[in-house]
Image (cartoon, rainbow, N blue to C red):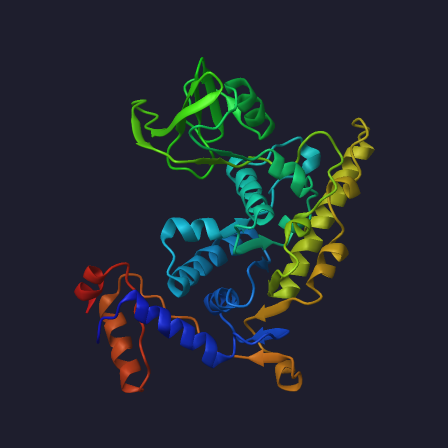
Amino acid sequence: MPISTSLSLQALLKAAVARSGMSVPTNKIAGLTPAAQALAVAGARSRSATVLVVVPGDADVDRMTIDVRFFVAAIEGLSAPAVEQAVLPFPSLQIDPYRALAPHFRVASARARALHALGSGTARVVVASAAALLPRVSPPARLLGASLELKPGQEISPQDLAAILVDAGFTREDPVDEHGEYCIRGGIVDVYPAGEAQPARLEFVGDTIESIRRYDPATQRSITPLDQLAVVPLREVFEPPPVSGSLFDYLPDDTAIYVSERDDVRAHAQKVVEQIAASYAEVVDANEGGPPDPGMLFIDWPEAEGQFAHATELSQLAVGETDRDPTSLHIGTQPAPEFRGRIADWAAEVRRARERGETVLFVAAGVGRAERTV
């Protein structure tokens, strides 16, 4: 069994996309396992600068994001940090707006990060659940206006910077040791942006940023200097109203949309809509201060689904319609078996596949692990 480099893997995946027909625009591709659907999405990157993938639930968002990141990194040769910025999850808020509960920080910041990346043109693939499409958000100009690109030598007062951070959703804490926190002490501002491994410390001379450094929150010692620091908002709804936008307002005009398991997407969305209506009715019946109408907080599902008019549907099962529809494609795929540490069973399966004349592709994180496996 020969050991190949990542360039060989890149060539194999590109050939698989081309030979299967995934790279050809079509209305529907059936027969794809979840991993094969992710490969189709990664292959679509060659035709569209931005891709939106809609999946049924938030668990599907996590799986699809991981798989698409793997294939995009392999096909385009991106590093792990680069692909994490290029392929972004857009989960649902996972809360009932009529129960006075705030979304989890990681969920809120992930949604804001994806919207910012779409609005600024840096997102390549965004994976959204059906429920994630429904909440109304502030327009792109408002969210981007709460974003910052900070560099040494830039003029901005510590007080003005703090005001922008508060608007972006940061909270003031001293010391700063959690994501979403900031602190101002004289001519020093500490800030911990979401998605960053360490917080950053900005030192000012007057109203000019003199230096930006990463630091260890445990020891407060500087780690490495930075040429720039991006601060992305932690929320998607800003004051003042109106909150009239949606995810679709952030999409570039040439965005390619893929919908995975469309019937399941519709079912998940309708379930959320019914839950919201029931919760609203309960609050109204309890005379709890006149809550906002659901139409003020969410877009209608037909409005969201109307954005799928030119989308490509991805499905695992084929029910025969692809044979009659010239705009559809069927690609037979099977899920890879999982051995969960059963090395002997895995080796036996590899031997059987080779005896059948099949090509076996085993992907390892590095050459050393691949050599040990072989």
